[in-house]
Length: 203
Length: 203
DNA sequence: GTTAGCATGTAAGGAGTTACATGATTTT
DNA sequence: AAAATCATGTAACTCCTTACATGCTAAC
Image 1 (tube, protein in one colour):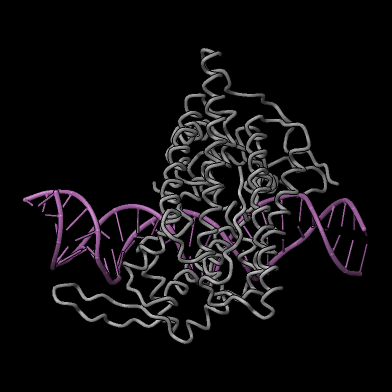
Image 2 (tube, rainbow over the protein chains, first blue to last red):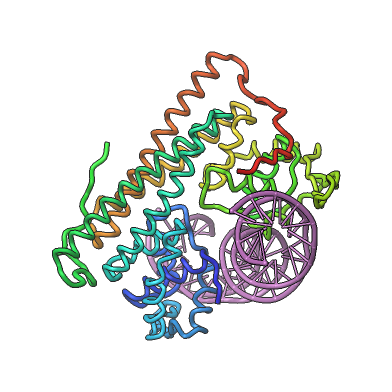
């Protein structure tokens, strides 16, 4: 029942991809790699076992793909109803997304299929978390630096954090504007129409 | 021989801390948490086993601390010669530090006790790596956004990456200036001494 | 012909996480 | 008295990483 953060993030990402369209493992891996979190690469050694776990849990179904002439038959995974349910439940559980960088990334990646209320919860929670980190970092920056390199690192990290908080502020403002204007849950399926989150220029 | 990136980072961090001064586990954990990578918290469930592994490998020695009256005797870990050796070797192996965010952080944290040449290698390698990521991100940003949220995330990540590259540029320039001016390896051991782990100040 | 991409997996080994176990001391 | 901090660990569970195994097709 537990499942590591890491494992949770992978499962969520897989569910999200399969919710769009059925896929076979190889293609799925490519799309996962294609994700914004560039450093993270999913190896087959973790993807296939994950897929099997999910299959055993009834979250995905594995159809033997139609063996097109001359091509090795591919196993196509598709989301089951239980899988769609699980996806919804995972998306609604925003705590990991606020605490963990990677989880946040995955959640954000799936924002287009997330309810506006949930999006706001993720964004707000994340902001609070980062603000907390920032506070502690700045406290440490206050007292005299023992190690110049360490101090420099802290300084830079604080800057980066402040930037990210600013970014979140913009996004939150945009969300609020949208839900104020749209009345109800304006954006679920998304796709044009709704103004994309405002660009905020830096530099 | 392998050891995960994660495990390597932890070992390196522990070696680094013990190189300053002997410590007992509890205090060591606090200092590790105190690190700039705020999100990462080291649990005793990973610290103590790690310490044991290192003890078995002869990298650290565990002295039974003198049981101060009424206090549970603390086991004080200290670096052995082999441990100091290992520390030097790990610091010289810059590849992981360029590839992995966390490893970079730990290496940077130990820059004060790293040779200038190694520092530059870490910084340069890191810069190249980030530039690579940035390039691929920007390539993706070039073609029309399918999902506004995804696009926004990429945009922000690209900005953050660019910022970090800029930071590295500054650091690299500073390093070059220093080694040009100082001739030899200017900064190596830094100050030693420091208070023994017994600094029991509570608030 | 040989590299590169497509495609699916398994096995060994190492590690992290959470929860549990224990007990003293200091603070509130 | 209760709660927090000091202090050291162990056990069960789960997972990831790396390397290996296999075989087909397309391009160079």
